[in-house]
Length: 143
Image (cartoon, rainbow, N blue to C red; front, side):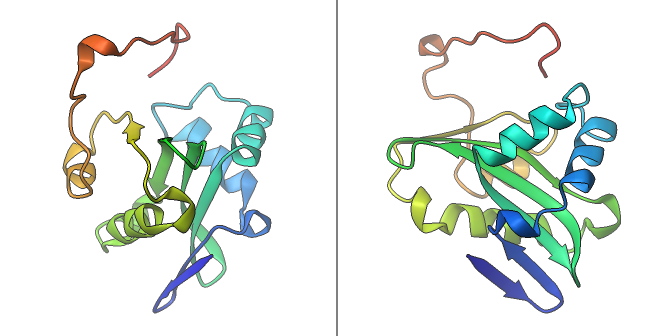
């Protein structure tokens, strides 16, 4: 699928993804994936619905959704390169993700964020409704 807005493109075509750029951002600029290996990045992309954001062929953003396409989705690895922030691109990216046909009718979406709560609230995300029901098994260096 593709969405167009002026000089920008969002695409779910994995062949368009610039995996080196994605991995570089995640391992060097993110707080959540800075210990992720290139192999882990590739495997995560292979097993997710991915959304690449491009400006005239250059990848400038990314997000992925891990899902069973029926009941549950985890939104992760969302980023926009710093020089492209403040242009409404993260909202547009979220609109594309939320509207994707394979992600309709899900019972639950989850994500983790340290600093983008207000962005995600605009798309219906909030604190866990029943935190006492949720458990996790996290790696020692998990965000």
